[in-house]
Length: 187
Image (tube, rainbow, N blue to C red; front, side, top):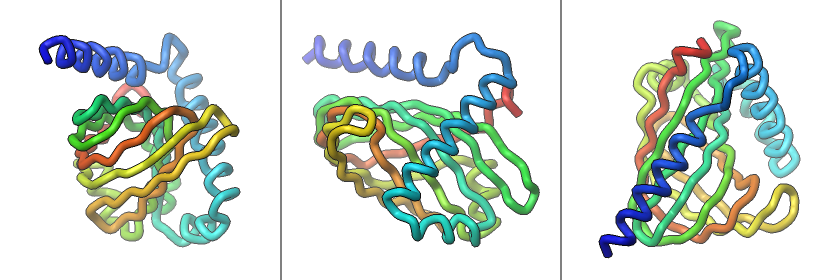
Protein backbone atom coordinates (compact mmCIF):
# COMPACT_ATOMS: atom_id res chain seq x y z
CA UNK A 1 0.00 0.00 0.00
CA UNK A 2 2.85 2.41 0.85
CA UNK A 3 4.48 1.54 -2.48
CA UNK A 4 1.26 2.37 -4.37
CA UNK A 5 0.96 5.75 -2.60
CA UNK A 6 4.60 6.61 -3.36
CA UNK A 7 4.14 5.61 -7.00
CA UNK A 8 0.97 7.71 -7.25
CA UNK A 9 2.64 10.81 -5.77
CA UNK A 10 5.66 10.37 -8.05
CA UNK A 11 3.55 9.98 -11.20
CA UNK A 12 1.35 12.96 -10.33
CA UNK A 13 4.42 15.11 -9.66
CA UNK A 14 5.98 14.17 -13.00
CA UNK A 15 2.68 14.76 -14.77
CA UNK A 16 2.10 18.17 -13.19
CA UNK A 17 5.64 19.36 -13.85
CA UNK A 18 5.70 18.16 -17.44
CA UNK A 19 2.28 19.53 -18.37
CA UNK A 20 2.54 22.85 -16.58
CA UNK A 21 5.70 23.73 -18.50
CA UNK A 22 5.69 24.29 -22.23
CA UNK A 23 9.48 24.30 -22.46
CA UNK A 24 11.99 27.05 -23.08
CA UNK A 25 10.20 28.79 -25.94
CA UNK A 26 9.64 32.53 -25.95
CA UNK A 27 6.34 34.00 -24.76
CA UNK A 28 5.30 34.59 -28.39
CA UNK A 29 6.12 30.97 -29.32
CA UNK A 30 4.14 29.62 -26.35
CA UNK A 31 1.13 31.77 -27.24
CA UNK A 32 1.31 30.60 -30.86
CA UNK A 33 1.51 26.94 -29.77
CA UNK A 34 -1.60 27.39 -27.60
CA UNK A 35 -3.54 29.11 -30.40
CA UNK A 36 -2.54 26.30 -32.80
CA UNK A 37 -3.72 23.72 -30.23
CA UNK A 38 -7.02 25.63 -29.90
CA UNK A 39 -7.58 25.71 -33.67
CA UNK A 40 -6.74 22.01 -34.08
CA UNK A 41 -9.06 21.05 -31.20
CA UNK A 42 -11.94 23.10 -32.61
CA UNK A 43 -11.41 21.61 -36.08
CA UNK A 44 -11.55 18.10 -34.62
CA UNK A 45 -14.66 18.95 -32.58
CA UNK A 46 -16.43 20.46 -35.61
CA UNK A 47 -15.76 17.25 -37.57
CA UNK A 48 -17.51 15.21 -34.88
CA UNK A 49 -20.22 17.76 -34.04
CA UNK A 50 -20.76 20.43 -36.75
CA UNK A 51 -23.65 21.93 -34.73
CA UNK A 52 -21.18 23.20 -32.11
CA UNK A 53 -19.85 25.85 -34.53
CA UNK A 54 -23.11 27.83 -34.28
CA UNK A 55 -23.11 27.43 -30.48
CA UNK A 56 -19.63 28.97 -30.28
CA UNK A 57 -20.62 31.77 -32.65
CA UNK A 58 -23.57 32.78 -30.47
CA UNK A 59 -21.73 32.45 -27.13
CA UNK A 60 -20.00 35.43 -25.47
CA UNK A 61 -16.84 33.32 -25.24
CA UNK A 62 -15.27 29.90 -24.98
CA UNK A 63 -12.13 28.17 -23.72
CA UNK A 64 -10.00 25.36 -25.12
CA UNK A 65 -7.54 23.37 -22.98
CA UNK A 66 -5.06 20.56 -23.53
CA UNK A 67 -4.84 18.25 -20.51
CA UNK A 68 -2.82 15.18 -19.58
CA UNK A 69 -4.51 12.91 -17.04
CA UNK A 70 -3.47 9.87 -15.00
CA UNK A 71 -5.87 7.60 -13.13
CA UNK A 72 -4.50 4.97 -10.72
CA UNK A 73 -7.27 2.81 -9.24
CA UNK A 74 -9.11 5.33 -7.02
CA UNK A 75 -7.15 8.56 -7.51
CA UNK A 76 -6.83 10.70 -10.63
CA UNK A 77 -4.97 13.87 -11.46
CA UNK A 78 -3.98 15.98 -14.39
CA UNK A 79 -2.56 19.26 -15.59
CA UNK A 80 -2.69 21.35 -18.71
CA UNK A 81 -2.89 24.72 -20.39
CA UNK A 82 -5.21 26.61 -22.70
CA UNK A 83 -6.85 29.84 -23.68
CA UNK A 84 -10.14 31.67 -23.17
CA UNK A 85 -11.55 33.71 -26.04
CA UNK A 86 -13.71 36.63 -24.86
CA UNK A 87 -15.59 37.71 -27.98
CA UNK A 88 -16.93 40.96 -26.52
CA UNK A 89 -13.45 42.21 -25.67
CA UNK A 90 -11.80 40.41 -28.62
CA UNK A 91 -9.20 39.17 -26.15
CA UNK A 92 -7.37 35.93 -25.40
CA UNK A 93 -6.62 35.02 -21.77
CA UNK A 94 -3.99 32.30 -21.45
CA UNK A 95 -4.53 29.94 -18.51
CA UNK A 96 -3.22 26.81 -16.78
CA UNK A 97 -5.17 24.03 -15.12
CA UNK A 98 -4.80 21.23 -12.59
CA UNK A 99 -7.34 18.62 -11.56
CA UNK A 100 -7.75 15.91 -8.97
CA UNK A 101 -10.43 13.36 -8.39
CA UNK A 102 -11.62 10.17 -6.76
CA UNK A 103 -13.26 7.24 -8.49
CA UNK A 104 -12.52 3.97 -10.17
CA UNK A 105 -10.24 3.61 -13.12
CA UNK A 106 -6.87 3.08 -14.66
CA UNK A 107 -5.13 4.85 -17.49
CA UNK A 108 -3.24 7.75 -19.00
CA UNK A 109 -4.65 10.09 -21.62
CA UNK A 110 -4.04 13.35 -23.44
CA UNK A 111 -7.34 15.08 -24.03
CA UNK A 112 -8.93 18.37 -25.04
CA UNK A 113 -11.60 20.35 -23.24
CA UNK A 114 -13.83 22.91 -24.98
CA UNK A 115 -15.91 25.05 -22.60
CA UNK A 116 -18.72 27.19 -24.01
CA UNK A 117 -19.82 30.10 -21.81
CA UNK A 118 -23.50 30.96 -22.28
CA UNK A 119 -23.40 34.13 -20.17
CA UNK A 120 -20.78 36.85 -19.78
CA UNK A 121 -20.97 36.33 -16.01
CA UNK A 122 -19.99 32.67 -16.41
CA UNK A 123 -17.00 33.63 -18.55
CA UNK A 124 -15.83 36.29 -16.07
CA UNK A 125 -16.34 33.98 -13.09
CA UNK A 126 -14.29 31.30 -14.84
CA UNK A 127 -11.36 33.65 -15.53
CA UNK A 128 -11.45 35.22 -12.05
CA UNK A 129 -12.13 32.14 -9.90
CA UNK A 130 -11.56 29.16 -12.16
CA UNK A 131 -13.03 26.36 -10.05
CA UNK A 132 -15.21 23.65 -11.55
CA UNK A 133 -16.55 20.49 -9.98
CA UNK A 134 -18.11 17.60 -11.81
CA UNK A 135 -17.93 14.06 -12.92
CA UNK A 136 -16.18 12.32 -15.75
CA UNK A 137 -16.65 8.90 -17.28
CA UNK A 138 -14.72 7.72 -20.28
CA UNK A 139 -13.11 4.85 -22.12
CA UNK A 140 -10.25 5.41 -24.56
CA UNK A 141 -7.92 3.34 -26.66
CA UNK A 142 -6.50 5.90 -29.03
CA UNK A 143 -3.25 7.02 -30.66
CA UNK A 144 -3.65 10.27 -32.64
CA UNK A 145 -6.44 9.64 -35.18
CA UNK A 146 -6.49 5.86 -34.75
CA UNK A 147 -8.61 4.09 -32.18
CA UNK A 148 -11.78 4.89 -30.26
CA UNK A 149 -12.79 6.97 -27.29
CA UNK A 150 -16.08 7.56 -25.51
CA UNK A 151 -16.41 10.49 -23.13
CA UNK A 152 -19.07 12.09 -21.01
CA UNK A 153 -18.75 15.09 -18.70
CA UNK A 154 -20.97 17.24 -16.52
CA UNK A 155 -20.00 20.47 -14.80
CA UNK A 156 -21.80 22.92 -12.57
CA UNK A 157 -22.44 26.40 -13.93
CA UNK A 158 -23.82 28.14 -16.97
CA UNK A 159 -21.45 26.39 -19.38
CA UNK A 160 -21.40 23.45 -21.75
CA UNK A 161 -18.28 21.29 -21.68
CA UNK A 162 -17.09 19.02 -24.49
CA UNK A 163 -14.13 16.67 -24.09
CA UNK A 164 -12.40 14.31 -26.45
CA UNK A 165 -9.31 12.16 -26.22
CA UNK A 166 -6.37 12.88 -28.49
CA UNK A 167 -4.44 9.79 -27.36
CA UNK A 168 -4.33 7.44 -24.43
CA UNK A 169 -5.46 4.24 -22.83
CA UNK A 170 -8.01 4.74 -20.04
CA UNK A 171 -11.15 3.36 -18.44
CA UNK A 172 -12.41 5.54 -15.61
CA UNK A 173 -15.35 7.09 -13.78
CA UNK A 174 -14.40 9.87 -11.33
CA UNK A 175 -15.73 12.81 -9.37
CA UNK A 176 -13.25 15.65 -9.73
CA UNK A 177 -12.41 19.24 -9.04
CA UNK A 178 -10.47 21.37 -11.48
CA UNK A 179 -8.69 24.67 -10.87
CA UNK A 180 -8.01 27.00 -13.80
CA UNK A 181 -5.83 30.08 -13.31
CA UNK A 182 -4.47 32.94 -15.42
CA UNK A 183 -0.93 32.39 -16.71
CA UNK A 184 0.90 35.54 -15.59
CA UNK A 185 3.79 34.91 -17.97
CA UNK A 186 1.65 34.73 -21.12
CA UNK A 187 -0.86 37.54 -20.39
